[in-house]
Length: 111
DNA sequence: ATTGTGACTGGTT
DNA sequence: TAACCAGCCACAA
Image (tube, rainbow, N blue to C red; front, side):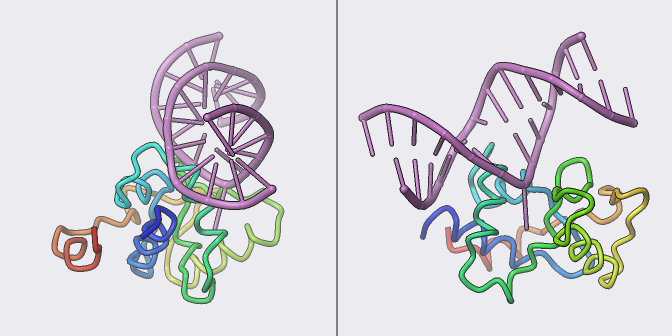
């Protein structure tokens, strides 16, 4: 299983209504300091339809696409639909950050 | 084997 | 706040 596949797998575990930072996903995937690689792995996913890429934002709680781009608006809309509140273009991580429990991880991650 | 790249991050100005 | 910037790293070419 490649690093990208691990990143994609972990991303699919993020529940609706929650968000995770690129760095957080990298850590959970066993790839510390590989936050930048996360963005690439998401973009490279073979089955985008089942990938909740919109639940991944940066460590500042902001969407990492240019603020006037189509992807930015799509991500914002999807999060809004899931109940994630965005104030001044920023998500309150203390409130919406995904906090996976040991069970979820050990049962779902094959590594 | 080497190099360029980016939907990052955290510290410093 | 906001801009800069060096550090980081798997992947593709």
